[in-house]
Image (tube, rainbow, N blue to C red; front, side, top):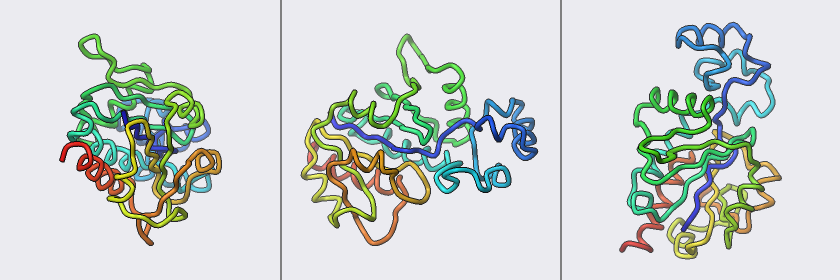
Length: 222
């Protein structure tokens, strides 16, 4: 089975050091929650986030939502040909079960992820749909044990979606950045065996997910 990791994803609960910031307290009260229970979101928390470590890689859970919607609404996933993981910038991993229906509404998605952070598992009909664990990117790769780790960056070798998909085998792992700007950290990039660039521009993660997985489907179903 092919694996897909959204790596260093911009998805996290508001960190402790920002929980008392006025903009975050105000937003949390509007939601009827404590500031330790909501997702860090640059749209609401821009003032609080100014100058924090890895600022440009954080506070964009909407981008993760886009990518996950692309990956979980296609035949490759619905026919159980791909396993999906979200690896976050603060080294947590979200595991997806089979046929998980991700809410199309961002606000509902936000609520599900906040519940997951609190309860650690989302279970329905005795099946685990989502589970979150403390785990580094390296530890996740050790668990998956892929034949190749294929990543995407403007620093990579120029290629095309079609050519890359043709080389992906059943035990390979695809790694796509789950952040807005920047490059993979050294700890992630050093684990990638085949790093590709698919254009001079930096495309958002959900675009790469959609185009690459469609090409993978063509090699399997067509």
